Length: 207
Image 1 (cartoon, rainbow, N blue to C red):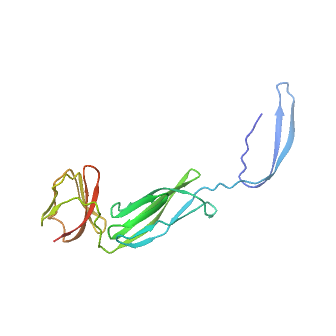
Image 2 (cartoon, one colour; image 1 turned 90 degrees about the vertical axis):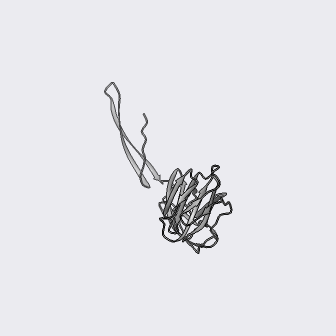
Image 3 (cartoon, rainbow, N blue to C red; image 1 turned 180 degrees about the vertical axis):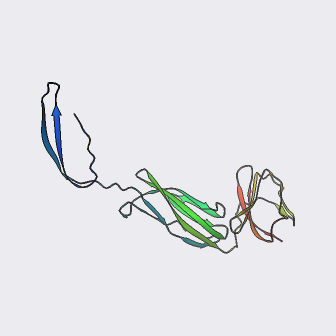
């Protein structure tokens, strides 16, 4: 017969085994397993992410530390990096190293998810982007702004307007104009998406 035994700690284990057969005979014998040493599994338990402070248009690599249940550093693979709010922070993966670039001033929550030994964990950090200059993206879709509306001479599949705090104040799809007359005066970020998925960020001022 066979019996699987899974020890939970290091040490010496003793077993008493009773046997029997159909003829009524039975007996006992003892055995032991000496010097049981459990192999530690380097399971990922903690993902630590450093806070980031950058200016608009500045780029920096995301710094992370992965540890196991003993607090020792282990190798892990980053599987995802996301930002909340999702707009205003550019995230790029370059051969396994993630970089963030500030597009819009504000405070973002960066979530890094990593995996080791089949176990996935996440860690968070704060990203603070300062200054409001140079936020326009190079891929610019054209628009016309008046006191009450923003109009689009080209086909636009999606329009989103954000406050500098990352709040969505306008969100529309398949439109050639949006009404902005109800908005408070100030600086906003306009995100446009064309029918090919090309996105463009623009700084606009509501007067």
